[in-house]
Image (cartoon, rainbow, N blue to C red; front, side):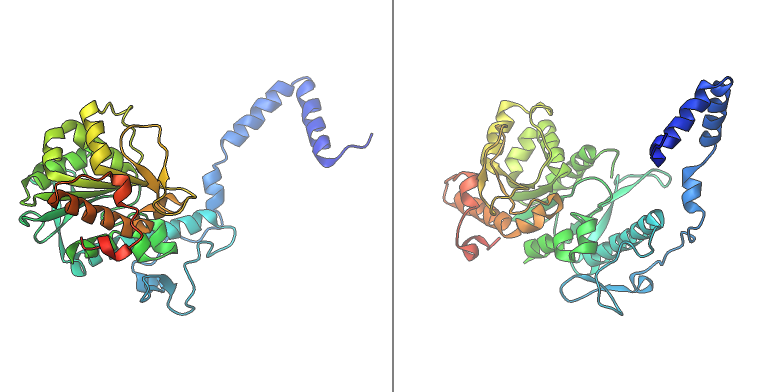
Length: 341
């Protein structure tokens, strides 16, 4: 009888198990396989997991366009630096990511003139700590305060998406353009936002507070509203969400919160539609409009101009005692008209 290679292997295994004593042989085979550490096999011919500690040692740098490029070849970052060593390449990528995080921190401090504030504010020496970044006048500027809330995961303060910083550019992946424009962790993200509100934002002198909340940051903001509804309503003028993952039903937001969000919030979501195209929503919370991209991590950057038009229109409406719908204020065809924020 002629069988193909796969059929032959299957046939042999069936015969072995059917013969007397086959059960014992099968058990022995399983025991043997259970003792094989696949992770150790992957490490067998793998180079040591020792990587450079600086961008310069990695031989990468950001060019004038904020793009990460190899200093000798001028090429973008290459993930598959060594063929057939995916685990090693991933560890190398993660090592570079940590360097990128420190680089962003340096930009926040040197380029944006921000200072790091340790949380909790009264933490003991051996207590777990987190931190936020504040501009010099964040707590005493009587006019406006902009709060940026990133998503969860490996991203840290000053970042929307580490992957974008590495593979696209600093502008699209970091919060620095938003910080620059505005200037011209506790146990869970929700608790972190609440803590920052209670200890910093609520004590600031700004009468006009604006928020930009990406991804899980939108969920954290809704939780803040549920716990500090009156305070948020009295201080926050507008909230720009970008691909927010909040769900007002699951989070049990009340009617008064939903009504406030309809007037003061707008969510730029990933979509194939052109930027600022109104989209239907199943939830009665806030207008959903297209961010002009299908990529979740790009929604903040692609919505950059629209967000600040939204904020400026909110201030103009406040000064004229009118309240135009959020979905309308973002669709001006004249880009410069609403970019004064």
